[in-house]
Image 1 (cartoon, protein in one colour):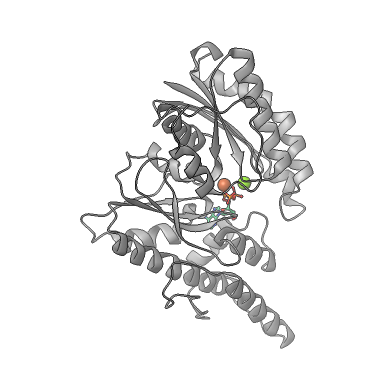
Image 2 (cartoon, protein in one colour):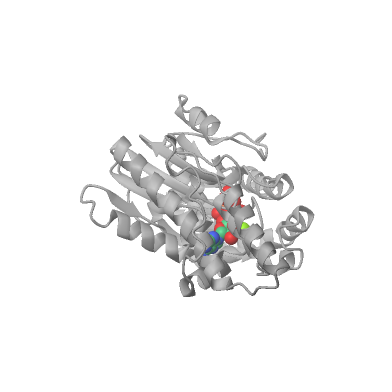
Length: 344
Ligand code: ATP
Ligand code: MG
Ligand code: FE
């Protein structure tokens, strides 16, 4: 079974061919980061235009790298949401055109389901499992009792983890996207400022990162007003320590409460070296609880993860019609409910 997957929800034009749900045959990511960098973030109109320019080139490259043509493809999968509507539309239109022209089944995929399924390219899932999703727009703890079933048991009440990283990075004058830069600086610093660990002792699996972001900004601002020099590496390390402490501690608590077999980490912030190390240390002594983290290139946006999620949906018999539309605010639980329905 070969699935051609398309992902254009943000600023990566990505396509991939996935064999039997877990083998990456080819994986192409055309990043637009350089075009957005000078604006300090993703500009939606620029993103759409780049997707239009890149999409056929990326398709050709994806098929070429796999040494395959469209005849060998069993189904076309595409991210239908959430994301930037103008960006999603390019991928959805491309997928529908390909499905129509080559008479192939079409499968719509939720972007976060994709991030989660990046882990299935590493190892087979064992249920129940818990997924810690930490990306640019989402921070959630999700319980999965089976394939395609997603139950959100905790989420951020304000900023997503990646968003906080990017905003703090901007304050420190680092380029977009700031996550990797903070991560690098944090390795060289120490937790000098001991920022609050938000909601750590509250009886819920929710998160909050907006206060931490403000605390970093205030610390920087106050020092500037007093004419003091602050250590950027210590500021980065202190911010990162607070984020990691809360993420690791809450995820561990949830994993224990729900008695899961696996903890799988998903989303761009899963590429964070400090977070990976802290999770590995925390879970290393757990014999019946396996920790899965995707390789770096499968943490941030890519289409291989979309293909991995689509493969299961394909096996379960789910098909989208040619009236499939981009849905910029598609919720994971709504998507899960749909996938539980009797397959068509
Ligand atoms: P979403 O998936 O929620 O729609 P997105 O697709 O924009 O959002 P991702 O591509 O999953 O987000 O991840 C991008 C985010 O990951 C950015 O905020 C980026 O700063 C962050 N990120 C990437 N690498 C690292 C790292 N090493 N440390 C911390 N954050 C990182
Ligand atoms: Mg991106
Ligand atoms: Fe993403």
